[in-house]
Image (cartoon, rainbow, N blue to C red; front, side, top):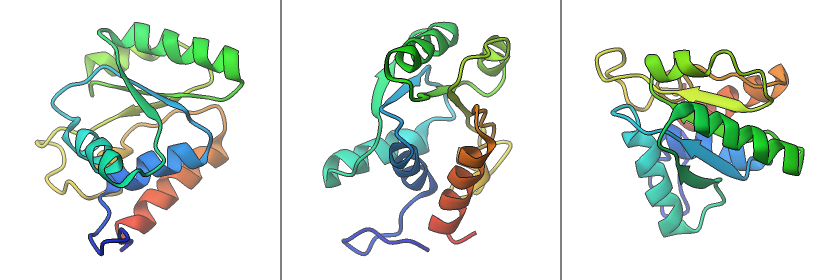
Length: 145
């Protein structure tokens, strides 16, 4: 299990956000819901420790979040991250084919183990499968899975 410089275990969401930043993701467009507490905690911890993570941008609708990620991709040439609700939010974004990392969380009913890599990287879609595999691998390694 990976540790912070202060000796505290890194939660899966921290490892995931750091891995996104390592892959050049600058923005994390999110339409938040009840499945976001680990991500919110990870952003709070990153702020406290000055860890390199994407900039969070709260967006009122998932379609707009995907559109913003697509626009950022067109401007930078780098896929950006989008996180949406687990059910309807995900369904509303499935028709978009832009190159972005799409994340949905699990609800507490689906996964009671909040440190598992699956709880954070439940549904990731990205234009490059190698990036997806590396993201999941880094998160799983950081949390000792």
